[in-house]
Length: 360
Length: 85
Image 1 (cartoon, rainbow over the protein chains, first blue to last red):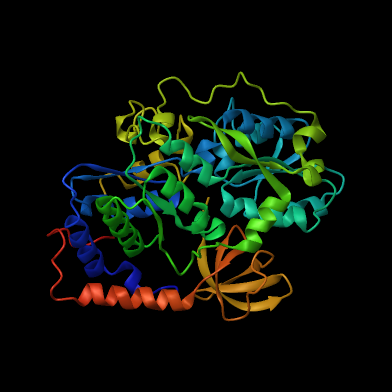
Image 2 (image 1 turned 180 degrees about the horizontal axis):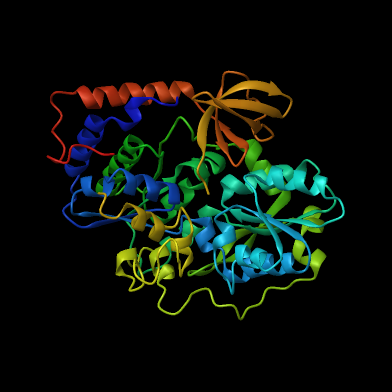
């Protein structure tokens, strides 16, 4: 299961590239993936260079840190300034709103990086006199872990800022946006291992656009792209599974039931994109008492801009432009001195391209 | 953020487990994989197992890959880059 050289076999990868080349439909094809881990795998292994010139593979809004609105990051910063201990994942703490959580910490606020929401709950148990807030960012892969902790009865002084996002409605919205023009989706392997392929089958059928879920080793990506391009060529608008060792049709029912016990779908803003109906996971009424913003009396500040002047993260997230098309990329905006969220996050498209540029 | 790694479950005590990856062991919460047992491979994300891997499906995929890699009639891929990675 792990460490099999087959998943990285260069001969298999080249053969798969040959199979893909033979699927030429005689027109340009634009595919999108929506996963930062896919972008990193594609860049690290130079897979774009193995694709024929008629295939364009763009990176969509697959980085939950990147799509978290600045106003929600600002809520976390204000929670820390109000005296709470704010815990979150490392990437999130570095993304700028008016400032970043790490900068707020340098100024005296109590913000801490955790590996898991379970660590944040333990932290609350160890600090019963303080409010411990988990800034809950991430797609369904992460939302199920937050839900598991809330459902299992976390300490009373533990609350969350609910910023999780749900992927399927975002793909629906992308397909309904006329100027993006997608021929197919490479579905995110780990998010889909939670939702199951059945979350996507109706979307693929309704839009007549094929979707194939793929894993993250080079062979996984190439098999998924081959299966996707075969469906593009045949005009088969269906969802298919090229990552069967991790993805089942019904996903992980226990994880899905945890998510929808604790959360409910709400309209939610995606940084750089706008509001997508039903794409956010807000706390359901039975768990509303865990809402940190209510406990601390915080409301979002709509005046906080999502983008600095010149930053094109929004267009990058929609696959409208490549990171290299942004005038700030690699000059004013670098991983050590990022301007936009796509350069801050490890899963951000701009950071992946920057770290691997000149490699492929 | 959605990075998850397959690890082998080596201990299960209720909803708490320990999993191994290449000799490195760490605690893994099993709340979301109620059927998992010792010896299973689980997909671990942010301290939680979020799925039990399907070993039969993995074996089938590997067999398919061996066929792809060894098929002498298959056309070669694009030449000359020395392969990925």
